[in-house]
Amino acid sequence: MFLFENIRLAISSLRSNKMRAVLTMLGIIIGITAVITITTLGNSLKKTLANSFNKIGGQTFEVNYRIKYDNEEDGEYIYKPMEESDYISDEMLDELEKKYPGRYLISRDNSLGNGKISNKRGDKLKVSIDGVTEGYMKSNSMYKLIKGRFVSEEDDNGKKHAIMVSDVFVKQYFGAENVNAVGCDISVDITGICAADFTIVGVFKYPKLLEKYQQSNNFMDRVTPVMIPFNTVKKLMNADVYSNNKEWGITFVLNDLSVDRDAAVNDIKTFFNEKYRNNKYWGIDIYDPQSELGIVNKVLNIVTLVISIIAAISLLVGGIGVMNIMLVSITERTREIGVRKALGAKKRHIKTQFIIEAMILCLIGGFIGVLLGIFNGYLIGYIAKYALSQMEEYQDFVALSIQPSLKAILLSLGFSMLIGVFFGSYPAGKAAKLDPIEALRYE
Image (cartoon, rainbow, N blue to C red):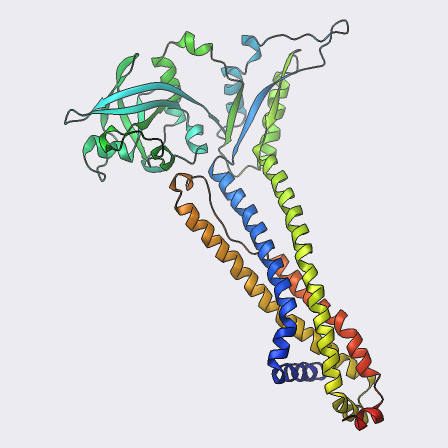
């Protein structure tokens, strides 16, 4: 009851001097608002980076070839160019697939060049032809599936004549957007190679980023990408020419998301380290983009913390204002203190009353500051979303997220209460020490 009575008295005192209370809380409000705004932006930026990273291939990692520097002979380092036996072979990949069935997909793509496709009206539609694997399509957020399916591992292994086209191509070819193109056969005249028939297995959204680089405003002249299986490209091209274009590494996609990412990366590293254990000159390294995201998050945490601490300095200014107004309040209520002491109130009762009043004052200011800080964070977020909406080509890569930090909110409210205790202690102690007789005489 004693606590609730003190809270009631504190609120009554603040209500009787509304303007003075608001001005006193201003320093606390500004400080908390700044801290919450900064932490909300920092937290939102980390979440946005994580979401965007996942959209552009967050489940990918690369296996790269590495030169071994511990192969000295007679005190001299020996460099040996990579030979056929030094590359990751198809046999290794098959063995990996058997050991971890369905866990990994390989992301590969290779351009087959340009081509032309004639529609029923005789228009020559321009296309760019790329050979891709299922892993490439799953790891690339630029291509969003609308109908059908992506080219699959089965298509790739069987070197099938499956093809994916864009919604723009569907409108060019059929003359309407709502046509179900999946299952239709088209003939592609591949420039300088051959003409081949393909069956449409999927339709994807035409990437907005590509629209930026279109050289013609004529819809029918727009060059659209089409995707066929990676190994089908190898079949249509000169295999000997292709085999000389060795890759410096292979990009893997974690297909089974139920598997822990770190464990999956470690398993594949162990697998290839074993394969290259007896290779004197070459080994492999794993590049995990997630590690870079972790570094960026650490930097953002440090920057957010430093700026928040600087912003929190204004809380000290607000605390001094609280101390000042509490001293004024005690002076105005000297006779009230004298009456309470004359009626039996002890020093600790008087001290507790004014400390609680200072805490209530700071807590209200802190709560207002939190609301304003969250509002600022969402306001800046909506401004950023509007700016992003004006750059449509980047919408496929950026996933904005506004997320206030609950931890920062609780810490800010707790800190504002501590400010009240700290800066209210001196005025409260001064009030508790007043002589009741002198206080009753005060006019």
